[in-house]
Each structure stands twice: as C-alpha cells, then as structure tokens.
Length: 164
Image (cartoon, rainbow, N blue to C red; front, side, top):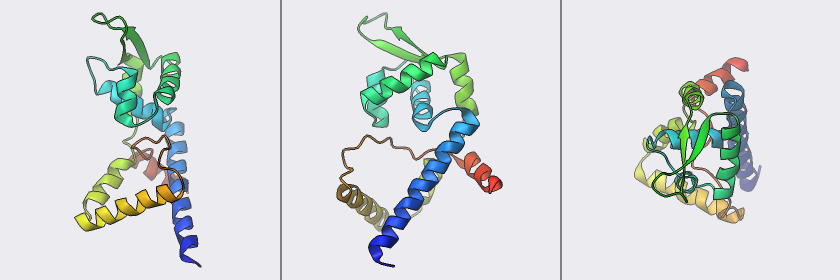
C-alpha cells in the first residue's frame, strides 16, 4: 500500500469514528454535536451570552449558530431575550429542559483525546499539529467551518463497544 493510501485510510477511520460518535450522541440525547456545544456555551454564561459570542467561542459561523439556535429554541431548550440594557442585543439562556438535557449528555469525545494528546511530548504535539494543518491545507479545508470538538464522550464510546 502506498503511503498516501495509508494516510487516506487513517483519515477515513477518523472521519468514520467521528460519524459513529455523532450518531450515538444523537441516539442517546437527541442532540447533535453543534447543539451540545452551543448548549454548553450558553450554560457556561449564567448571565447570558449572545449568538455572535457563542459563534466566536466555538468557531462556527454566525449563520450556522443561528440555524442551530432556531432548532434549540423550537425544542424548548433555550430562549432568546432582548437585553434590558441594550435593546439591540439578544441574550441566550437555557430553559429548565435545556439544563436537564445538558446534564444528561455525555462528555464530548475531545476530552479523552485532549488527555491523550497532552500526555505526549511537546515535540510530538507540535509535529501532529503541523501535520494536520498541512493536511487541511492540502485538502483546501483551511477555511471550512469547523467546531473545536470531535463529537461525543466516554459513555457513547462504551455504548458503541457494547453494540458491536
């Protein structure tokens, strides 16, 4: 097998694993990864947060965040309210149902990844980062909208193993 074939195979495995975790998250919680990310961001700001700040924090486009917010609001998981201090500003907050959903959701997959990544030597972390950035550039994917999260967490990983 050529080296480029091995690399593409490894990339497909990462994509497949992420997809499986995403499907499991949706099955377990009824939430998508971006929905979970947004709920976490809103919960982390008890005095409220704007949609633009959420988009900035999780590195998704404002349009993407707005669409996800519409779905979350429609499901009764969060609500939008005009700021009393600045009427142009709309503040997001979780509903009781949104808080319950967030409490029941598994930890994101990246938490396990982060622990493993941080246990690597600094030079190896830099090498992996540089390699992935180069791959993204080679795939013309540098400007794509992507959150800083892989998908779901340990619970879903355990469930996946049990299902297979």
